[in-house]
Image (cartoon, rainbow over all chains, first blue to last red; front, side):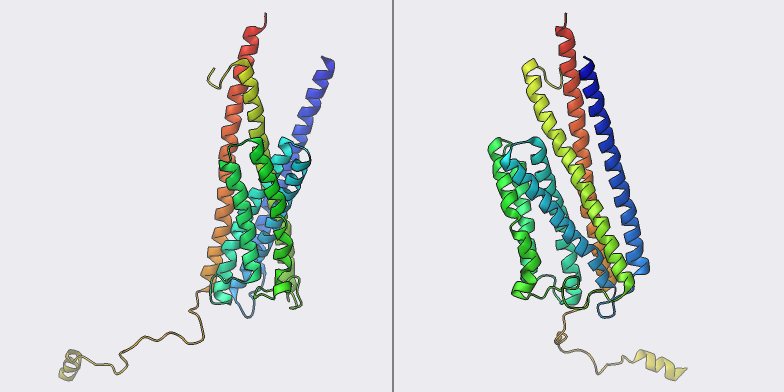
Length: 248
Length: 82
């Protein structure tokens, strides 16, 4: 009895620690967003050639990076799930795919709005755009499978395989510009001279940090959601043994 | 005065009335950069807000279902205990 009480107390304290960590991450993300917005609109200079539309860059690139983070989480969760079945690993993979789709949607919405000014058209089938779209579609397919697959073990394993294979496209997105010489600019990693003003560099670094916190918060938030759903499934099985329903 | 009234009554025919429409050559029609940036910014927050809101609503629904099930199981256990 004493051991049981002790283990319950330790579970409660670890849950409390996790709550504190989550709130801290959320606070960091919120502060980061406020600082980033301030820097983008009030401090960073307007770019000489493109004008104000270049400021899209400060949330377009960090969103692409956040999409990578989500996809990596999906890859890790899926790979771990294929090695050993566990609800938590499955929840991580699903949360990662959702974060990848959310930030992928941001990338696909903001990119064309910049492109219409810079290139004169919203979309072109150049390598980086095409591989990015393909990657987002892989994770959309993952989520559709999870939503309409029936929820069985087979569906989860198939989704885990998709989560594992879907990550193979990620390096292609990154290296596509160099490999197939597309139109997409390479300001951060290329030889173009990078960001020419110190405020541009500071804003970009802060934006990257903010989107890391934001992706981490959303990932954790969705991970908790899918862990809760797994707990509900276990509880429903337990309730069946007692022959009770929610209305009992 | 008379001269002014006469000039007002006479319809003026401009010599620059367009007889055809031609596109701007070698340049796509430009959209205002500020509007594009505001649209992009609005998209970012709209997508993220929808993501958070749907998650929050689903979490609340799941928590409520878990609470109902747990209390139902607890009631059965209490009834079955001697």
